[in-house]
Each structure stands twice: as structure tokens, then as C-alpha cells.
Length: 365
Image 1 (cartoon, rainbow, N blue to C red):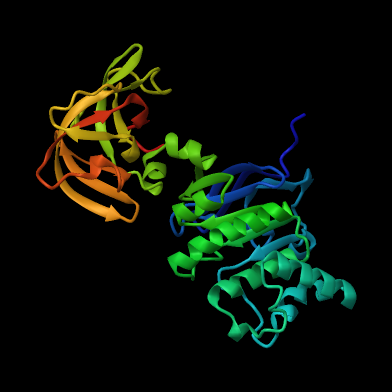
Image 2 (image 1 turned 120 degrees about the vertical axis):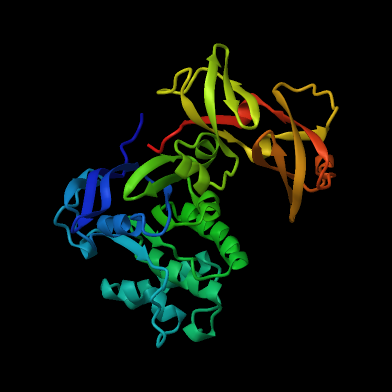
């Protein structure tokens, strides 16, 4: 039997003067789900988080948790946890004091505080750090102390506002996996704000794209990557092969005229698009195949001709930039793949299979 969402937002709006920070946001979050709010700086992600926490008031709409309307319920009475980017750790307290602070404020006994703090420190792999001072910790260790403090009171919902944003990329990527593992082990429902697509993909069960205060698209990371709904979502996902095209036919497959050449994708046409319409064509970078110019392809797809402009090595992957027709396209391969054995100026044959092509309306929704 399907269960009801634990958190429900219905047409939530918030404006400052004549400027909308949040507009008609509706969102359902299931118990134990880890949701990432993803979007550019200033798009309304943090404002939405603060409204859910009760730190900001909304102008219209409703928010309910476990079926209870949250209107008028004070932030401290909601039972939610919050972890900020600046962490707000107390420098005069040791690790134990920081993690146990919220528990003591709740009036928990000394023995229960000690047991709970020790449990949380073990969870974040800091069991031997209880007497360390905050200034003695590395950036990553401070992040884990802040996470342990947020989890110690057993929040009904945990909200994290770019908590890893101040760390360098290598440490941030390491902690992303730890944070997801810890949150899943606890089973807490969590909302995580980030502007970093890689972080969202590493963490999220569901990604919610926010732009100009509106939810543009939401869904599992892999589903969004395969079928972005708008150009904004596609570019936020790092997709670069986005060119204009015109639908010239649609039967068992869809035929598209584009500056790169005639392309095809499996039918039927997406809703709202008809033959003769202008569209945006996304060609997925990892879906292309390259070979010497006279190669006979055995796979299904459109065969195009291109010229290699540049090759960039990205660790285990190589980017090949090329001119195809009148378009500049990028293809990505594992560095060990024979397809990467090209040099600038080489003529290549490019196979574009139907599954590598996604169509969008030509204008933003």
C-alpha cells in the first residue's frame, strides 16, 4: 500500500516587495528520502529551506508534515534539524560539548547525553575525538562534528544548507559519500541545498531543480540526466551539446534538421512539439562514437562527418572537441578507449544513436 508523503508543500510563495523569491512551489517528500534542491545562487533554494524550518514566513500556500499543517508552529516546536554552511560550532566547547549542546537544552539527563553523544560520534567516525577542541580539528572533522550535533536530537526532518561549500573539492567529494551513508543509516528524511550538480548527484535520491523561485523539474538523478525538461536543467547538468533544430518528419522515428546534419531519435514526438516546429536538440556527450572517417558502422544511428579540434584529458576520461557540420560538439570517452587516439585536424566518422538525442521545446518553459 503506498504511503503518504511525510512533507507536503502546496503552492508556497514568498516575495520581498515586488520580487518573488519563491513562486507557487509544490513538492512532496517521502519518509527517509534525501532530496537535493539544486539551482544557481539566488534562485530561492535557501529561502525555501528557511520557510520549511519556520525561520521565514510564506505569503501564501500550505506546508504540512505528517499530515499536520505547520502554519503558526514555532521553529523550535517543529522538531526539525538545521545544518548551516558556517557550522556555528562553539569554539569554547570541546567536541563533546558541541554535540551534546542541543540535548542539554532539551533537559536530557547527563547519562543520556553522554550515551547519545558517544553514539553520534561513533556514527561520524569521531569516537576518539570527544575531548578535542574545535580549533584542533580539520575542516572535514568540523563538518562531521556539526553533522553529529544536528543528528543528536533525532530530528524529524534534517535540513542542510550547503554544509560542505567551504571545503576544497577533494575533501568535499570524500565527505559527500560519508554524509549520504550516515543519513541513510539513520533513516532521517533530509533536504540538502546545493548549487553543485556533482554534489547533488552523489547525494540525492531526488533532485529538485529550482530557478527564479520556481521548481523547474524534479526526479531521480539518472532520470533527469536522460531527459532534462528545459535548457536550464540541461546546462545545469553540464550538458554542452545543445543545438537548434527543426522537426522535418515523425513516424517510427523523429527526423530533425540541424546545423550538425540530419539527426533522428526514437518516436513519438514529445508533447507540445509538432512537425515543422523549432526545437533544441541535446546530443549526450557519452552517447557518441568516433572512428576513422571511412569506418563502416554496425550500430544503429545517424552517421556524420567531423573534424577534431582539440582533445582534453580529464583523468580517466578524455574530451574530444570537434566540428560536425556547422556545430561544435563534445564527446567524452574513457581515456583507455581506442576512440581517444585522435589528434587535432583528424577527420572522423561520428555515430549518433537515437538514444543519444533528446528534444526540448525551443523556448524555456
